[in-house]
Length: 164
Ligand code: MG
Image (tube, rainbow, N blue to C red; front, side, top):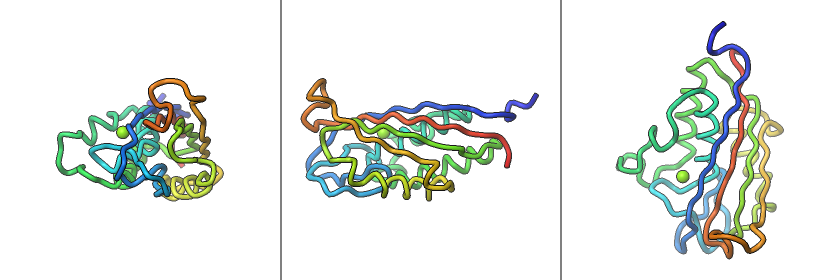
């Protein structure tokens, strides 16, 4: 049996600090907010978590290995470009994306008003239908280091299937 037969599940996680003066780009969408995710690239923690879910499922290196933050190539990079590059590798490994589901935990920007835009943008980037991508925002109930909008934490899970 080929390694590429059947279905594969992958899990991704990312966390970024939210800092003043940074664009608030999450899920490939710029949200109107006074702070945004710090990072070497554009800091899009949602796309980074999705990338790690994809690479985890496909058995590829993780986002930090593929796009090291010591490499000036990726300074300020649009994470959509990184996702596009990873999707090519996923397809090259013989898989297609079945669906992706994301939880965004933050007390920074409100997620709910932007769910539809994030789903549409990520579906476009992943070359799937909008109903194959879901996004939920969660409050942190004032608990922990990310309370008060200090940061954003993201979990993503994806399912890949082999072939067409
Ligand atoms: Mg990241």
